[in-house]
Image (cartoon, rainbow over all chains, first blue to last red; front, side):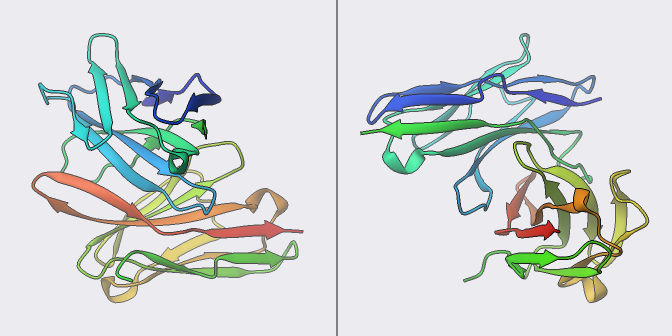
Length: 117
Length: 115
């Protein structure tokens, strides 16, 4: 069965500093996708970044990058140059299988990030 | 606003009452998902539609829950005889496969409180 583990309930970072949010996963499938979502206090889930299991390069989207270490089954999110607006819950999620078929997302328990001035 | 919308945003009900939530996906998206998120947890998958067909249901979706997506557009999630354990945020997401990526766009959620 798929499982996502986020071991950091909360993280603190100072504005303009970089922060790494940890995520490890467990799957027996060879093909899978890894996602990070941000959930502000308003409740909506905002897609940040995606990494496919066959992607050879780490994904990057602006200030977000995904440190994908397949052998260690980890997919850590790195936020560079933190901003006050980055304060939110962050969820790591996994989807098994190919993109074109139905695949539900399995989420971790989240990490609450607080960015201080 | 062309994002996923959900209505209502908040619902307070008494135990035993029925409630219905609505989700309007992004118009060209053919896939629609429902998730439930309880306090301190990540979202958990409930059910999935491709167009109007309900193709997958989680075991979390007891027989008190029913979801529909008539005509493959908006979707409704009904909970009958609500229980206090049903209190949660109900999230809807829609997606369309683009360049091989099935990115799910989430709505703002409906927060249900069962008294």
